[in-house]
Image (cartoon, rainbow, N blue to C red; front, side):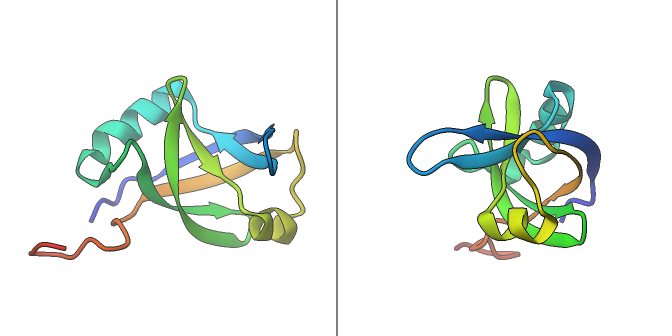
Length: 107
């Protein structure tokens, strides 16, 4: 299991579409480091991660867009932390095993 962690501040942005989605983007340099550290975890370009924003910890998968990884913010996270578009939030993030990945074997 990887123990590398990133801590940074990022702006909550909205990606419009039906329905609207909200994200926090990692910096390009942090994204490059995460991609390198989590090589064995990447699937379909996504990296499974554990994220802490405020008092809320959650698991998700970040995905690349324009050289940066985007962290999706579920409605439950936004509600719990009272987040809105344009807010700047402190984020702690670390790679996690894929949901169906097992140690020492297949599947």
